[in-house]
Length: 233
Image (cartoon, rainbow, N blue to C red; front, side, top):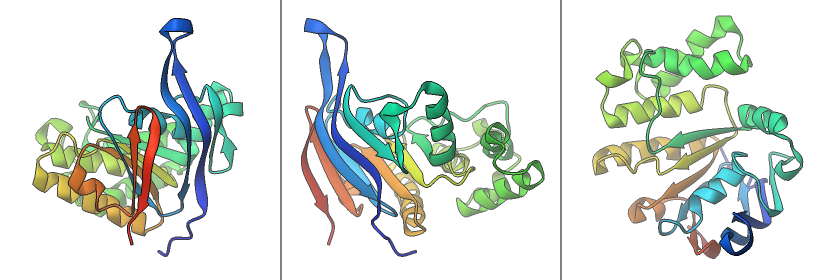
């Protein structure tokens, strides 16, 4: 799928402060960036630089202290928690370093679960969609297993399938390869690349320098500020 580079995400002069007064800490300082449809963007920087804070603002997990964050036409700063919850359900999905699969559910049931919550997919179609997504990430043969029977890389693949359950336009990945060996990290990265090629907008926080250099765009953050924003030729 050809990228249109429409600005699906607009972050404008975003400031995020935790605490008040002398104890206040600015995790983000006047950050401005746009992210296009089908872009695969790595956000890199040292621990505590503000990478995950930026991801949380884009995903509506947290809100900016000042400035604006507009995602898929939604001004997140003007939304109450109920509307933010609906926004997250309909527009974004998260993949984390730790897979957070439900241990008492099978692989198939883990992927069906978000569909049960959102009810955007009809009940009759959910099982078939879950199987289709597991096939997409190479985990169809493991559908009836429990997460404990899977390797870390396999669990991450299931987590990605689960994130795709309600067909979000935006995938936010916070250190998705950080808990994996290099070979498995490569497999997960290639999977994310394929999703971006299909039109998903992916923002990935990573410490992995080699993988960050292979995305279509790399943003470096230091002390809560963007210090470089480079697109690959």
